[in-house]
Length: 360
Image 1 (spheres, rainbow, N blue to C red):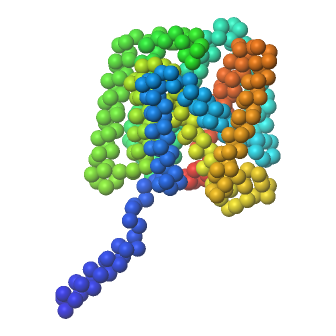
Image 2: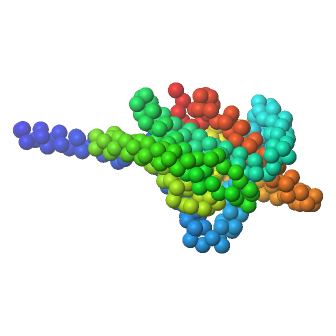
């Protein structure tokens, strides 16, 4: 009788296990397929872009053009799918779309006149470093909140880990003191070697601490896989782009591909979740192309628009034979984009939390 009871209990337990998921939830942004591409696929693409350029520098211009055309232009245009593809968004962000770009381009042009074109390259070098770091930190925060990593200790360790490596990277690049960046004259902030070494040692301690923390969590069965993978990709790309790749242009290319591709996927996911109930009659065009089954159409529309806008602008500027004007215009657009992103993607905003699946 006792054996029969034990057998029944075993069968019941097996039945219960059969209905449990084979894989525990790991805090994906969307799902395993999406996040696999978002974290691992994009990281691989970024590393390949940079290291292929290192191995064969003659391929850099080709990869650069593909990055700027298919990712860079598209990346900037993707921002405007949140601002201009429906009347409600346009009204809400009217100043960001009208007066702000004019002001930013005027200030950019004035700075070039007063200091020379090097100021544009220098500003871009440091601002894009900050922009890339902040975007990555924001994504890590989303992963952390989806995985309920909200305690003060974990938050402090996360901040130190995510910021220390990029800080070391830009200090190291400044210590190298390159004089050219993407074909433009460059002046960097003077950085002594002792500071690079000190920050490097501190960063090594912090990252080592974080790795030990993740190993402990793994041994306890508490490691948050998606979060750990993303932070790891952040560290790998920044170390590669700033520390391992000696050439400033090749290192920038790797980071730029990583940043752009992630951003495109994030914007698509935002729009897709915003219209998860289906086509919205108030936002018919954007809601239609943002449906999951129309993902190819969505990206095709964005690529076509970015190609049309930027190539037509380039053609118009070339008619005036004004290379300095083109540099001011494109850098102004970059700087405007950085400002806008810092405003519209705040996680404290409820619509952003809802779209990213971290509503409180």
